[in-house]
Image (cartoon, rainbow, N blue to C red):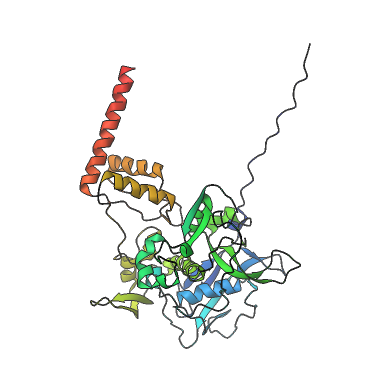
Length: 410
C-alpha cells in the first residue's frame, strides 16, 4: 500500500546582512587650529533624524567625544558650522547632527591641545558631566548579556580593559570600585554574549546615556543605551544600536565614562600620526614617581615614532609597557592563555589562537597572533620566556613525531 510522502521540511535562511550603514559617509569633526589635514574625529551616521529621512549622530554624544579629546573641555566648548566659529550649531543637545562636517571649538584658544591616547588622558574626578546619570539598580539578572539578554555564551567584559591596568592605577580608579577595588571588581564588569563582547572590545560600540523610553506611555528619561561608533560594526545596526543596556552595576558610572573615552581616543590616532606638527597633552612621570600632564608641540616624526605602531594598542605611547613575558611553569603558561580566552578585553585569543602562535613560530620565527579585526589589528604579540618556548617547541615536536608513528603503524 502506497504511503503519502511527508510534506517537505521548511527551513529558515540566515538573516540578510545589514550593511546599509557602510553606504553612508561619516560625519567629520574638524580642529579649527589647522588649515589642512584637520579631521580630529569621524563618526558614522547611525541616528535617524526625526524631521527628515537622513541619518546623523546624536549631538550630545559627538560633543562629549570632542570634549574628551580636548582634555575634558566640558564647560567651555561648542560645535560650529564654520572655521571662524561664528555659526554655532543650533541643534538641541539631544537632537541629531546631519551636516557633513563640524568644527569643534574650545573657548579661549583656537589651537587647543588634544589628548593623543587613552594613557595620556586624565580621568575627570568630580567633573563627569551631570547628564551622565547615576545608575539605578534593576532586578534584571546580572549573569545575562546586558545587550541581547542571552543567558548562554556570556563573558564578563571589563569596562576599563585589563590591559589598561597602569592607567587604572595612575588615575586612582579604585575609588569607584567594590572590595577589593582592583580592575576586576564587579563595578568594572559588564556581562556580554561572546560576539557582542568581541565587538565591544574592538571599539565597535560604546554605552552612553540618551533621553529615551521603552514605553510611549512613560515620560522619557536618561537611559544607558548602545551607540555604534564604527562602520566595522555595521552588521549590528540597527538591531543593536540604541539598545537599552541592562545588568549595569549601580557603581559603574565612572567606569562607563572611562570606557567611552577609551574607545573614542583610539579614533584620534589618524590625526596624530599624519605627519604634521601637533599640539598635544602627554603624561609625564617624574623620577620621584609623580605624574604631570604637559602640553607641548611635537613634530610629525616624533608623533609617528611614539604612536605609530600597528594595532589597537598603538594609540598608546610605544614606550609604555606593551608586552608581558610569561614566566613560570608550563601549567601557569596554559592558565594565562585560558584566562585570555575567557576574558580577553581586546586580545580575543582562544585555544585555536594558541595553535596559530605555535604554527607561526615554526613557520617564520615570528611571535604574532592573528588580528581580531581589520580596524583594530590588535598588537598582541606574545613573548615567551626562552625556557618555556623551548619546552613548547619540544612538546610540539614530540607530538608530531608520535602522530607520524601512529600513521605508519596503521
